Length: 150
Length: 291
Image 1 (cartoon, rainbow over the protein chains, first blue to last red):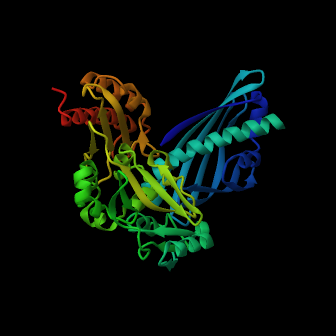
Image 2: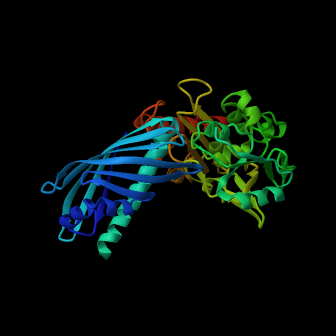
Image 3: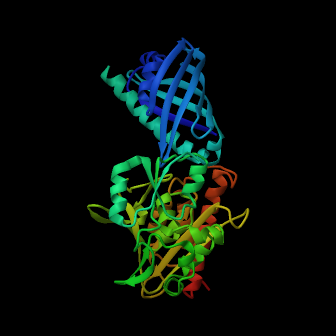
């Protein structure tokens, strides 16, 4: 399943880019992310908890940055998270692009192509999609707050 | 399935004590038709399961103060075959007959169905159309929540972990009113709906205009959806096919389905429009209009 989220962030593209490349800082803006560990500049491992009603998931996963193009304001990454409790996984390819909207305003567009695998897939597809919406909107708010205050 | 401790309290008070002791580690068990599947899939892994099976006073269908009161532990099958339901709410009996299979209807309870908050289930659609409310009981007392404000998301409701859904209240229908339920099932009869629709039409005294309308849809969003804008389009307008068509196209914009094995999101939106229109036409036909 594919989805696109867009957010307006109160800062210029350069600052937004720098912030987005600080993966640990980005992780702290994503709801449910408990831990981000750097393996090297392009590879990270992370843990994220997601709760949907009575269903609690704990994804352990890795993330690899596959493209960084500062000039074009474009970055891409792949993610793979496994929940051992349920026996399911989410794989995603995420592309981010930044556009200037004004001197102190940028637009962040995030395109996600995700697959929900295993037992999660049966129940998971629509649920994960809605959850992705709420995670993204909370992420956008946190991002805005962080970039305004710092 | 993961290991869990099983509790079978014999009163609501005992249930409340267990709930306050175990909090989010506990799940209430009624008929078990939904919870056990999720537990077997290990999607839900409660450390404590509290069965309501031995708590007295939670079942039964009664008439009280101009309302139907349904104990939350009443099974789908009991409701479906109740003479009182058949007489006053034939729509509810019709809806229940479409739920899964008879074996599941014999086990699954109506309170469990609502508390499970799966947006693809059928009874919530009709119960919202009938203006039902639920009684949530806790140690500190009761609160009554209209069912259209009960669901908040996939498997999520306004219910707190210390509360028990104990009763469903359905007001007797006003005069000049009729309700319809349509479950669109293109695959197999025991499948989840691709789209389900329940509409209730109340005509004014002239019998020609829509006084009030409820339009409710299932399986096309994160919750049971009440198409309020479509309802507003109809209020006070003539009950005609043209007006219904207009309302159905408004309802189409109020649903938010996702693509799955039952069809693409686009297809489900189209079907929502088609079945809202048909349900309203059936309402009118059963009130003797639409010729």
